[in-house]
Image (cartoon, rainbow, N blue to C red; front, side):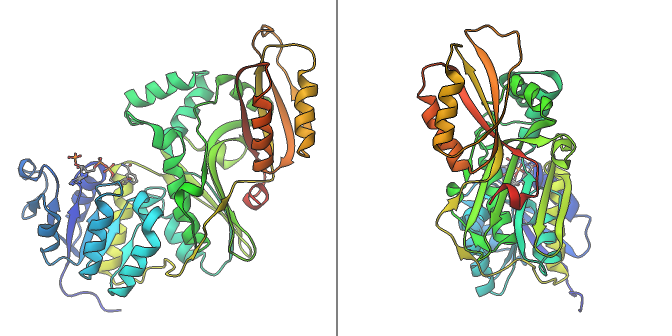
Length: 427
Ligand SMILES: NC(=O)c1ccc[n+]([C@@H]2O[C@H](COP(=O)([O-])OP(=O)(O)OC[C@H]3O[C@@H](n4cnc5c(N)ncnc54)[C@H](OP(=O)(O)O)[C@@H]3O)[C@@H](O)[C@H]2O)c1
């Protein structure tokens, strides 16, 4: 392979947490020349923000007119980022992005556009920040047939759940603390409701299984209903609680099962040890079995490593290892066939267990054990029922029926118990 004679001309859009770190790092590289930066506040940034001779603009048309080889998109969100990426690719300008929403929703269309125009679209930073998991799956594991993916993909949820685990803090106290320390947004819904993680899971599914699903079709459950009481019971079961994203595909590679939500994870599993902004992804292949990738999933510098590595790969004319052909799937099955933890808080009276058991039995769901800590008032008595492996659809259907009973003082909670290889948890 021959090296390029002239440095690659790079234009950057977005000068926030990641954009600044990328600009700093790009200016240390000799194979690339950061020629221009787009930002809404372009006129107030030039003074020493980055070394000269970078030009500043607030117009995408101006930026793309700088005879760029690579456009780096770091503004986030779908609109206008998707249109900007399309515009660059149509001009034959390669694109590097960290944008999970754009790639999860429109990745296959944009990759096809890049191929049509003879340029590249790289997006390593869109999943797990500085952990090169997309490259590992798309390149290093290309010789295997992947059947399962499981990961901890959201640092905000890690932080909140770790605080609840360590100090017995309530969800709202842990969330307020995360917001005060800058680990959670003012509107934390994307993180706590699992929307951020499911976009990343959709990208992992199209790299790993070559299946592209509508992101909204992936079940996402919030961590908000988890209480300190759940951690007490999780520990009795040898587990803690994390937001887990899981996906698997069937043997024909046409059907996808995927879900994101809080789950019990065994205390001795790598998932339980992930904390703060760390991410972890475990991939199961038919031939190679499980491989695991972990490291810092967020933050300016770790994410910039992934972005700049993508730029350098283009400078060095490396071929992208991402697949170009995808099977579109219209529906995504919920996670299934896991043992479950069901927590109820009830106004106690005789017959409650019998009523629950009847509803569960009607859906062929088998009770494993009933756990109840002493010392709670009969007006709000919590207890837990563990369930032998059952499909998520059956569990959530039963829970809907159980909710209609008149003894609840808090909404029941169902958490899958992650104990086995991902293919056994998500059928
Ligand atoms: N931060 C992380 O740890 C991390 C990790 C992995 C991936 N990512 C991804 O990296 C991307 C950037 O994230 P970030 O954390 O750097 O975000 P950020 O700090 O909010 O920075 C975004 C920058 O883009 C600018 N911008 C937004 N919309 C714009 C528009 N329409 N026109 C012009 N400028 C616009 C913003 O300007 P204003 O300040 O004027 O709004 C800001 O300077 C996102 O796709 C994110 O998901 C981030």
